[in-house]
Image 1 (cartoon, protein in one colour):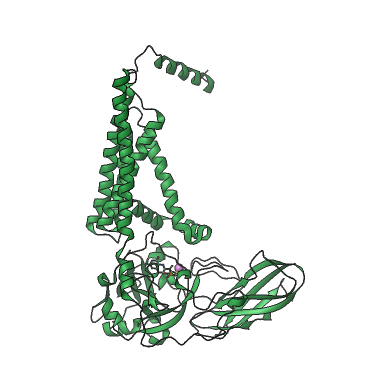
Image 2 (cartoon, rainbow, N blue to C red):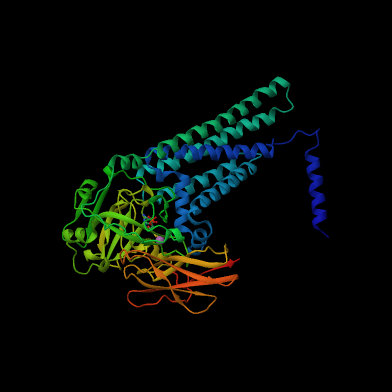
Length: 538
Ligand SMILES: Nc1nc2c(c(=O)[nH]1)N[C@H]1C(S)=C(S)[C@@H](COP(=O)(O)O)O[C@H]1N2
Ligand SMILES: [Mo]
């Protein structure tokens, strides 16, 4: 009978027969470490070369980033939600790091399966190259030249792999030869592998430098301040309770939440930007940046919130946006009967579909924004131009780096998130959050000030109530109202019993609707439920 043990001993015998020092091995074999090194160096060289070429033909062409972007688009919704929940705004860094680990493993594998001959690893390298090619080819934001980058990666990867493999094998074959005959191949391999490592570093860094010193940052700096003809009313004192732990009323741009699918922030210079308005319109329009900037610019204070914001979550911020009403642009284009959505496209291929009824009335405040908090839009918030629509979650209204607006029907065009489990229409839900005390905090006994935010754009907040340990709801004090398009802060001083206390809050909007306590997840159209925090009164 054959057992695992006998099988093992059989193999053991076979091997010792081959390795008999008196036998000349039929084919030389690379040590595992050397084989792995060859694989890793080849992949590093491939990536670096591709990255450099991508810097010349458009950063979306970088095979590594293109694969990452494709991964984002292909990731199932639950995993994306999990990544956002777990890693917050670092989720893309985690993805890139995860890809690096996978690539490293594949590179090591390519080496290890090629210890005797370079063919298996070559095939794996070609496979990897094809993945890069397909990823770049299917990016919506790159030109035709873009395939040069992954093609370079493929050629360099395969070439370097075979070259180093040959040198490494020559070194192995030389073992057993005389001292001087050994030294030559060993030095050749050493020199080649060091050269590849250094070369990859230089090419990769060069590519990074070329993309990093991007057009957008320089272009943005050159624009200076964006000054509106009609500024937003000044924020009154008492609009926030920052001293008691709420956010400041206007979120500094650097702290403004950021959510998008872009692995590298799209780089679009204002000089190169065009916005095309077309589809079901009487007149197709094309704007450049100066066309927009020289119009009568308005400023509006708007609170934006992400549909992925969990109950109590951080994806909400407020800014002074400067731009032109979308209603004005649509009036000039002349929207035809039958148009239902404004289908907007970003330079990186992201799309959103906004219900036209939210855009045609100028007073509703939907804008094509080119400024934020007195400056041009920060690059990561959509420079040179984005949409902002008060009262709608960002995913279906707030397209950043927007370059195209098509008037069309729901039937004709399907925006990005629609096929990924999110609703076609999603007005902002009435909601509230407790900011202080923090969950798990310990506060001194006596008077405790509980504070937070509430929002219900564009209806506005009328009331916020707080209760302790499931007791009676007590009304909180509201901050000075600014606009129904913005959040509102609240606070309440309470005498709390020592021990662990659980506090909840709920808001009522100006339509009289009271925030539901029913907990629902963020998909498909925004989470509901009361936020609660538990802390210790000590
Ligand atoms: N081009 C582009 N625009 C986009 C997105 C995106 O992924 N790509 N995400 C949207 C989502 S989901 C939200 S909530 C807002 C966030 O805008 P912010 O990053 O400026 O806060 O942008 C919207 N606009
Ligand atoms: Mo969002």
